Image (cartoon, rainbow, N blue to C red):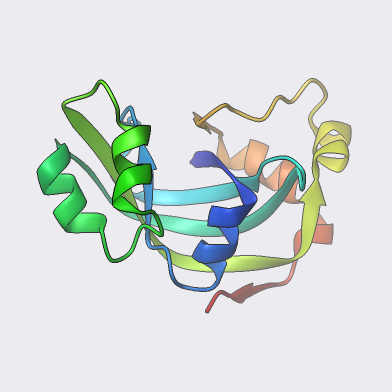
Length: 144
């Protein structure tokens, strides 16, 4: 299971249905499967679940063509983010579901002592995810 740390601006775009691709400089070792969205500071909370529909690594020109309408970034932001690289990664997010009660970092750490949110992404086991989510995060509702 993939846990993505995402800036709140982009979390909002994902939950609104405007952002379907999350960009990364390095490719996770996953092609599809479940995932969790952690909203970074100032929110610092688990906000949603999703399914990885696909992961694409491509030359930047081709990657931009793929994501320009659905990554919620400008061309300048895209170029700045990938500066110095020849290729980039787009993670296609599908079946996004909002947690009715976000799980704050403090609560995550109560269930998983020592937990540190990742800089970009990390892998979690289904048991870790269940421990993080607990019953307070349910039920979930589909994002826009």
